[in-house]
Structure formats: C-alpha cells, structure tokens
Length: 149
Image (cartoon, rainbow, N blue to C red; front, side):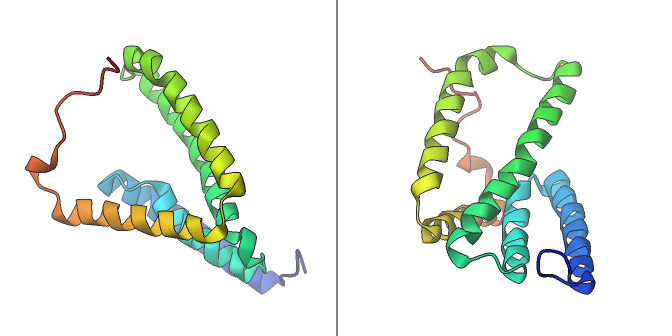
C-alpha cells in the first residue's frame, strides 16, 4: 500500500495518466487544444480517488497542470528558437506583462475559493469548445499581433 492506495489502484491511476497524456498530446497536435483542458479534469478524478480533500483538489489540479505545462512550454520555445521561429521583438515587448500576469494569477489562485477554479475552468472549456465548433473566418479580431503602443 502506497499513500493509502493498493497496487491495483496505483496501476489503474498510472494507466489512466498514461492514456491521458497520449490523448492530451494528440488533441493538442491535431486541434490545438491546450493540455490543461484534458489534464485538469483527469487530475481532479485522480485526486478524488486518492482521497485529496475537496477544498484543495481543484487548486491542486490547476497547479499540477501548470507544473506540466511550464517545462513543456519552455522546451517548445527552445525548439522553436533553434529553428528561428521565435519573434524576439514580441518577446521583448511582452515579457513584463507576462510576468505581472503570472504573479497576479498566482496571488489570486492562492486565495481564491475552490469553486472559482471550477467556474473559470468550465467557462474557458465552453468558450474553447464553441470556438472550435462554430468558428468562422469573420471571428478574427485582426491579422496582426498587438504592438503595445
């Protein structure tokens, strides 16, 4: 028994996480759906099975998802940079707002109630699904990236 789970339960969780990782990677590659859209609900169920208390379950899911997404994003940026596919001009303009957003989001996440995480996740998931299903060419906001001026 490990962490209150027997070997069978651990094997089931491991297989679920492997299948989820494969599905997440496939959907990200084919549809551009972020891994968090798949990982967060699976982590939620895994943590439920593992007996994680409800009040910390959703923040833990989001944090775990970010713990996976951050190194993956860094690795992706490195690979794109090697191919010359990173626009450093945009990065120089946007690095500070990105850092401020991460810090602000971290502070809000630290003190936000568990229910807020669920509401935000569902709202983002529904908007992403609607965009995938109903998207039209006219829905574009513009052809250029914001310039910050």
